[in-house]
Image (cartoon, rainbow, N blue to C red; front, side, top):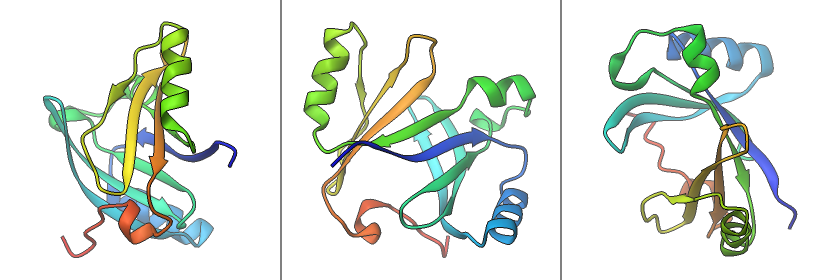
Length: 140
């Protein structure tokens, strides 16, 4: 399997407005929504798209006001790979640290930055089932 781009994440002003726009324009669906506690920061998020790919939107960390500068600096894209350990080894050989995200039964993730400081989420899925890959609670 070749690595492929799965998602990109942007900071936005209004999550519900983004859901309405992208679902109406492209015929996508709300895949999931929730709250993330990342290290010492909290934010709300939505994923909009298909089972194979999506656009993620999140609120500014800890309820901070939105700014266009923030939207440019606080984004990331997600790349799915088959052999996460080989990718991590190649990152380390280039002097790029990779931070592991917490344990999950159906996926492994690391975060790193490219030479210009852009954040990359690198994912290895341990299941082919979208319902297992993601922790979506659309009722909440």
